Structure formats: C-alpha cells, structure tokens
Image (cartoon, rainbow, N blue to C red; front, side, top):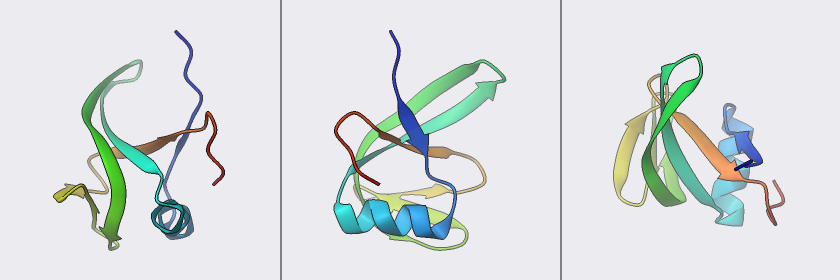
Length: 75
C-alpha cells in the first residue's frame, strides 16, 4: 500500500499543521527502511525547539518523525 505523506521538520511546517488542525502521526525510524508508527496522534497542540505535543503526549523532535497524510490535506 502506498501512502503519500509529508514529514514535518521545520517550525513553520509544525505551525501550519497546528493552525490547520490536521492529524499528525508520530513515527520512529528503526532502520533505513523500517519504521514504527508510535502514535496515530491527533492535532498538534504545542511545539518547541526540543519537543512536540500531540494529543496530550510529548515527543522529542530529535527522536521521532512527525508526518501528515497528504491525501486531502493542504499544508
């Protein structure tokens, strides 16, 4: 199954996701071609240079990837 997604890396991308209230999911990279979805998440509530808060949980920006499904999403 193919999924089209965008990885949110910059502050402006995270801000746009929060402003548009899109569902953000959290992914942990296990190896070059293997990932684990940690949380199917929700809307982005808060972010800082070090962490992101999604659906009440905090995630470290340097340990996880934050993705949005691009199907029907405008970011």
